Image (tube, rainbow over all chains, first blue to last red; front, side, top):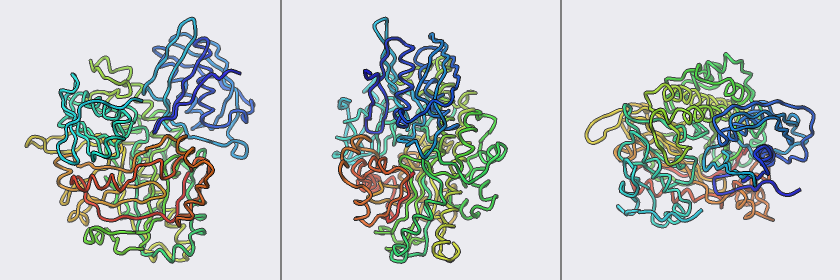
Length: 139
Length: 485
């Protein structure tokens, strides 16, 4: 599979540059990138699914809030995901189903404690030719 | 990132000013504490531009300040200090940071290096088992939602009331371990859910618990008053913050301020600087929520200090009193406080943002414990795990120049992956062991990210604050045992 994201690792910053053929794919790829920072995504089994709905003002905020929702689920409920089916997406709303399982210390290595997606240097751009975004995380 | 090419005017060897005329929209000049040699790495990161951005914030007074450990942060630089006028100023969550009241607590003992080294492995194992650390770790405190709501208002006092610690601990904590104005009604369900299982956990990343040995004393009078009397004496340093609770509060309120900022007609050069007038509903809500997170962090360090005492007690077979384990002080490194400062000859109330900076109140200040009024407030400055940490005191100069603030630590110099690369093929645990430092960590590969070479040398940082007079160094200690999350 073609790489759908790059990791940014710059002094105190850790972030992602993520690509997608359309915004839907970008949102899904950004979530995979997030969990790649957190753990080895190939070790996540798809034992449960979780529905997420985000409402926001624009694409930028939607992306940040989507990632913050996933970070919240990881930190508060110890949920790890590696597949994201985006059911509905426009500039103001996102509905998705996430597949994964609960963190299990015997099988999952936590590489990094990602704590928040920030607005710092946030960039989302795209057109019919494809989408690209940059998100920096607080760790 | 390109090198910052802006305008820096040398005031003296340790003060560098960015004139207000550098950019239209700056309300005050920038002021960076550094040596000429340090400026190269500071400018490599565009960090001075963040000092400039902070100078745009409404109500900022005197200067947008940067401590010598300044590095690139989200919105505000880490090491940034800014005071805002209460009537015309703003509060910015980015000026506090995500880990609200990330800070350090220092305990002293009457033990000496040799007797602790004899049992260092046992001690590190005991501490490791007693103090939950690492990601996904849950605390030993079984909290109900009501418990957490009380804790976020009462801070470390709540923990002491539960029998973990004593009132002397509270006296030796900034604000008595309880910041006023906390309102649990301003906390989201998500913050509560993240916070409940994490009370009394060290966390991960750069957080640690260190057993240290006093290596050098610069000011014997001040160190004696702190109960630090001799070279070789063993100290304990705890570095952690408000965990997922503080992060969620920052995230929640940044989102609100992002949405409301246009209503207040505030234009900013960086979205992450989102803010609200101190007197607005959004501003007040954030301050009340931030106080909850600050209190959570003090409660967190209080629990960990208690279990540290228990661990020492078990290993040495003596009660903590016999081992002389007393709290020297506990300071916040990420916080905003309403304080009174003298500006242009007038005493006015301001909201001081300290993000990666330490309060450094001078001798005689009413907000420091009676027994420290002669020497000034203890300032605790951790370095990286392979080098050293410093103990200093606040000064009158800090009060006059930097809103009673000074530096907070070393500051990162290498990215995490660069740090891992620099350690490639080397055994970080063994290298530390060879230096006489026993380390226990949840995740060994991540340990390389915290290697010494990833950080600036804290000695250079402390020299700048000492020479420029915004803190006075008292003692230096080196680690002999480290717990990392």
